[in-house]
Image 1 (tube, rainbow, N blue to C red):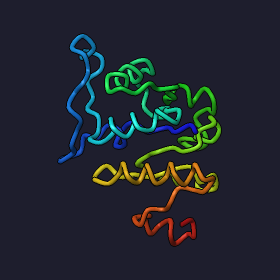
Image 2 (image 1 turned 180 degrees about the horizontal axis):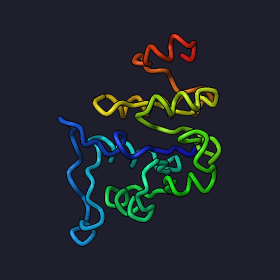
Image 3 (image 1 turned 90 degrees about the vertical axis):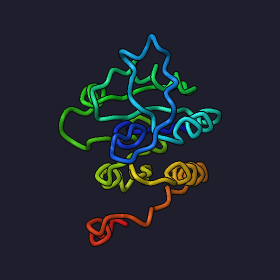
Length: 168
């Protein structure tokens, strides 16, 4: 199964009170690779990469090589990094902000309810919020569901805006 992760506010959290993994970036890479990895992400990614292909799908313009090196420092080999440049080459500037299914991604993990709403018919997005301490367990549950050909479970914190439209 191919699983992708967003970067900002999903794997990289800068908000107040965010907890991070101890830096494992080699000293000679630190000028280029310096962002903090969310606490619990290193173990989760190492666990998932044993049975699944891990990708990164982000709307940032970060260099794919830098992202791969950064996660390699934490013990995860990334199959592919789709950044905003690559997304725009594939789809142009119009359309959804992310379209994981069109890249063959079975499950995308993101912090954005907008990405979830754009892909609600594909049912392949798991939303984890930046301040959720149980985020890794939600991802594991979503991986288990998608592995059984079921959609990821809807978290209880679906915004009322989407519930009122009947999307959830």
